[in-house]
Length: 309
Image (tube, rainbow, N blue to C red; front, side, top):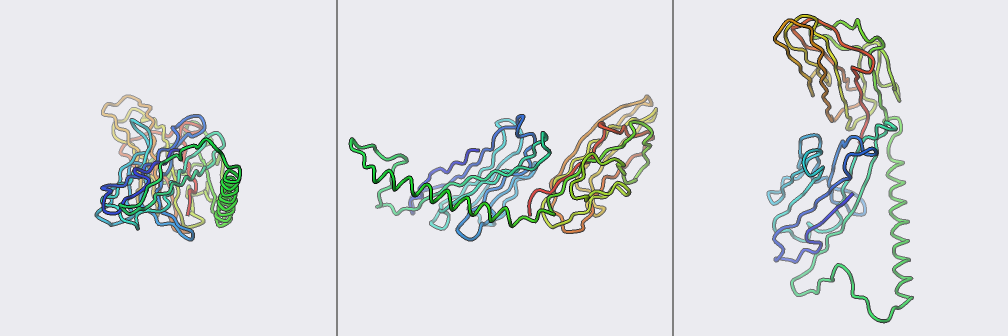
C-alpha cells in the first residue's frame, strides 16, 4: 500500500496546499474485494477520522471549509483516497494513517492493512532537511548503531500498540455468514416476502438464522452484506427486485425486468456497507409483480460479515 504526502514539510505561511493520498494494492488473487479506505490523523493516544471511502461514497468527517476529498474503490486507475487541505497550518501536520480493509475470498476473512506517514512543520527561515541525507566519505559506526536502535525501538513500540489494538476487538463481534437454498429449483417467490435461505454454507458466530432469514448484529459497528439472486420468470413479464434491508428499511437493491412472456433467467448482485447497532436485523426481501422461482444452491447467495467497530 502506498501513502504519500505532498509536501512532507509544511512551511508556515508559504505552503498553499497539503495533499495526502492513499493507494491500496490492486484487486488480485489475494485482495478479492476492497471494502473500505479510511484516512485519519493520529497521535499517541487517539485518532481523528478525516475521510472514508465506502462503496461509491466519499464521506468527509470534518467540516473545515479548507478541506476536500475524493476517492474510489474501483474504476480506471484503481482504488485511492485523497485528502486536500488549503493553506495548511501547524495543526494540520503530524502523523496521518491510512487504513485499508479488504476481503479475501480464498479464506473468507476480512484483512486490515495500516500505513502511516509523518508531515513536518517549519518556519520560512528554518532549514528544511532533504528527503535523503548526503552520504559523507567517512561513516561513523556509532551513528549507524544509533539509527538501528531507534528503528528497533520504533518497531517494538508499534508492535506493542498493534497488539493492544487487536486485543481491544471483541472476538464475539467477528461474525460472518453465507447462505443459499439447498434446492436448486422449487423456490417460488412472491411479492414483498422475506427470502429465507435455508442452508448456511458458513455461519461463524451463528448470527444468521435459517428459520427466518434474519442476521442479528451481535455488536455495534460496520458490516458488509451482499445479495446475489438468479431468478426464472416463468412465462411472465414484469420486474423482480432483491432488497437488503436493515430493520425493514431498504439499503441496497438488485433489479431485473422483462417485457415479453417467454421464460427468463436473470442474475443480479448488490452489496452495501452499513453501520449497525447491536440487535439490528438484516434480511433479504423480494419485491415483484411477476411469477417464477429463485434458482438455489450456488446461483443465489446472501452473505455478510463484520468489518470494524
